[in-house]
Length: 184
Image (cartoon, rainbow, N blue to C red):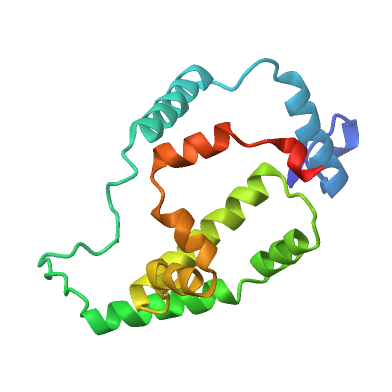
């Protein structure tokens, strides 16, 4: 910016002296820094600005997240279709196939066959799976009845037939009369 400076010299009274002053970027920056240094404390109106921010934060916490949901709501409830007996049988067959192909169960059964003892959790897992396989095989008609198997065994071994005919009292009396010295 330029300004006109009046000269006080005697010969130049009629003619004013023009002094041009250009502000450099450094001058502008230094003035800004000086102005910032002069200011101390918080900005004017900071008290009100903080309370507005606090109110906005509180309002955001109270806002219900379900409002404005874009999830579609089904207006008509369709009746559930019952699966047919054939479909249920297929699912039972699929479940049985899945259990028979269970790699973890096979590994645990191999360990049991080798004489290893499993922990309580693993043993419970094996028992549950085997019980489920037996149940599914029974539902699908793949299991033979135990009665027919036991009848076949009795027919093969006649001494079992004699024991089967005895009553509980007779068996108890036989147990009481049992002598361990006979087997030594």
